[in-house]
Length: 480
Image (cartoon, rainbow, N blue to C red):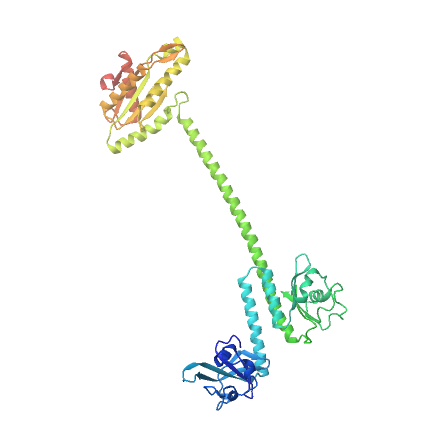
């Protein structure tokens, strides 16, 4: 009534005023003591408006207000009147409400609605909260409120076989101190039998827990939480000595419905716990798999690196670090195919050290090896990135120059020869001069096959050495 926003006057069934709300007191400039027990005519005597209920019968009443109830009475709106000042100005509206007796059927319907509302709110809790203790506390508190008490408890049967008190409210908040055994106390008997148990006078009951203080509760009711026919917990309510109302079969039925909701809450919590365990296991498995994949990837990369290193060792000459003859045979065909597609020329330079035997005999094989390394270094520093340089065997070297003319091939061969000769090696405080002879064969002028071009470059090299060494010579038919 105090929360009703409009000015209201409440009448009993004899049309005497039994109440007025703060908005009505303000509008009429009266207080409750001035109006209670008077008729509307007496309330409005000498005022600027006459408020009456004449001509209105109960069957003509407007919708009742279920939130405006008092015990066995509700109130229905019978008239709305305007309030005018002495000059006729509008001051506001006054709603007049008459008391109507609520029938037993209405009372039962109201109780049923309250039960359904409490169950609906509890069901919403089950789907909106993952905190089991919060949900169970809401269940027992709503059950207590609906059954008109403030004392209640809820126990859960753990997998260890212990009936553990989880929630206690009112005088039963202290039951959380006790873990009852099977068949002991109200909860223990409900646990054992799987049936509700009502004790009208707990202090005088022979089965009461001796350690539970006397004088706290009068009547107590326990109902099992059943899942697939097995007890998984106990829910209970009690009345203190301030109330002489007992528990009825209807109360047991209501508490059973809350017990069913508590079972759903337990099932949800266990499913959530299982899901969390499964998620944690999957995350752990995924992490382990990810780590294993990383280790595997590292190992694969290491194997690929080793394979690359092994391939390098397989195609590299260990003394000069140039490619070897095997690599030349693979890549020469590739370079010839590229030259054929692009229609460009290709030069093969074959060279050897002119005085290697003399150096070996005079200065030793170490000096001979140093001579070959020196020639390899000059070649490596003089070629382009796309050119191929190989140690062909013994003191012979082959250089493949792609996309060059005969003139350019000759100039680059001369440059190589001159640089080798201009940079002697040092051996035991002596300068040892190195010279090379070079033979050149051109694709496609001198041939189109790799093996044929190598043979012709070798013939040109042999001819250059025969003409005095330390010179560059192209292949020609005259050499044959």
